[in-house]
Amino acid sequence: MSALNDCKDDLSESGGLGLAIDIGTSSLTVATVNLEDGSIVAETQRTNPQNSIGYDVITRARYASQSESNLEQLATSVRQAIRSQIEDLLQASGIVPSDVSAVVACGNTVMQRLFLGQSVKDLLIPPYQVQDGSASLCISAQSVGLPLSCDVFIPPIIRSFIGSDALAALLAAGSRDASEPMITIDVGTNTEVSVTDGQIVWMASAPSGPAFEGMSIDCGMPATNGAIYSVKIGTDGCSIELSTIGDAPPRGLCGTGGISLLAELRRRNLLNEVGSLNRSAGPDCVDTSQPSARYIVTRNGSTALPRPVYLSQVDIRMLQQSKAALRATLDILLKRSGLEPSDIRRVYLTGAFGSGLNMEDAYDIGLFPVLEHAAIVKEFGGVIKGAARILSTPGLRDEMNVLASGIAYVELMDNNEFEEMMARSQIFSRF
Image (cartoon, rainbow, N blue to C red):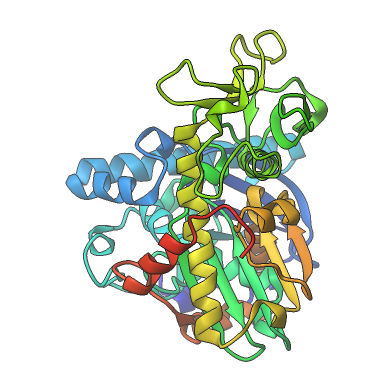
């Protein structure tokens, strides 16, 4: 790998086009960027092939640490997937590889190191820190199998599991320039949460798991056509009004659909505060014929698939754990910053889940405290937008290490306070 100073002084000086890459745990996004103004020209998103090994970064890190061949397998699979995306994106846009003069690639710590083919063993044992360097890197595109002849700039890891994607999201949110209290949340399998008082940025990684991305629940799916993202339940508790992405026939529940459904179940007294379905609601609403009770969202014949869509009691527990992890993380950061929810003036939500979240649903199940004075900003591709800023802003690349080192990181693994707050955050209620 090249030293950082082997890169061109400013990626934006090359002119023309650059590529921004978000190496996400669940999905991979590649976008072409106008280097003069940082605008996104076109982008493509695909499922991360590493999902076949496990949906979460810990499972993948353990697998990669078992042998060199396993590490190579994970590195090769993600590189080949990104290479294919780049080739398809360039071909569809009529761009030849020589037109691309710079690349910025971001990911959480595990995904970033697997992309580079680096060991992740140090992230599996206390103190869960990268031991062999976390600074920015500049490498040749061909060294990681990409069909380009330019450099790839990889921003620094912040700490532990918080990688360069969190840094890119902060840039997109404007957190580093914030003059008043704000929150930035990039929701994914690993959810990065930051709180700033206008001077210091506190950050932590919430182990929210894959449930918010529509995975690990029976009828879950990513936020693509046919995914149910909003649910309204009638006063009878059984009649349902659904909204799906693309207005397509319903195929399953994406993360925001799961949160919407939980909020409606609470409002109709079909789910109690501790997360148990009301089994006395009747078989037309709550099916108790299966080992795990389930709320029926759609019947056979009313979906794009030959099965009903439902939310089971097991699914609810999965979402409950995810929401508790996120809420506990946010509460800890607010406590560390000395801020109250009423002090927050701006909230930036990104990721497929965060950008589509209904805040009233989130408040009603206790996913967030009520942020009554905050302007809510939702943006789907915050990491890509931040990477585009790095590509197009002269001198910004050289500031990345200083910016990363100035963040007040809060470790949550083996943190008793986090465990206590997570237990308190299990309840489905405003608090």
